[in-house]
Length: 74
Image 1 (cartoon, rainbow, N blue to C red):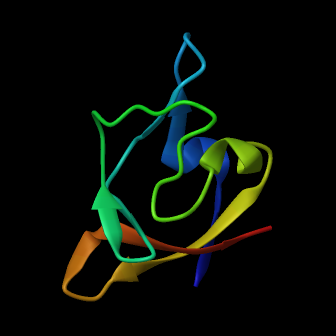
Image 2 (image 1 turned 30 degrees about the vertical axis):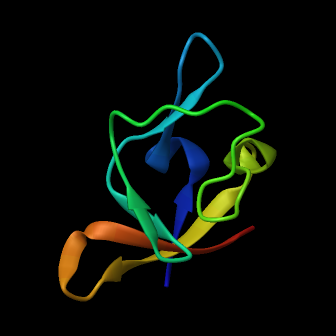
Image 3 (image 1 turned 90 degrees about the vertical axis):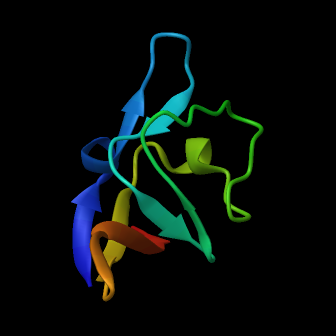
């Protein structure tokens, strides 16, 4: 598992929404750039806004290394 800073994976947009910079998978849900979501939205059961100042533990998906599987937060 690798450790990434939150800002390596997510963009905080001027309107306060978050958008992934690359494809990610969390709890079986895959989404990527172009998806923007606010503070009350859960994706894959996770409110990512809660973790803006955390690092993210992730590993590359074996069959698609462009996708990061989110494993946890530090």
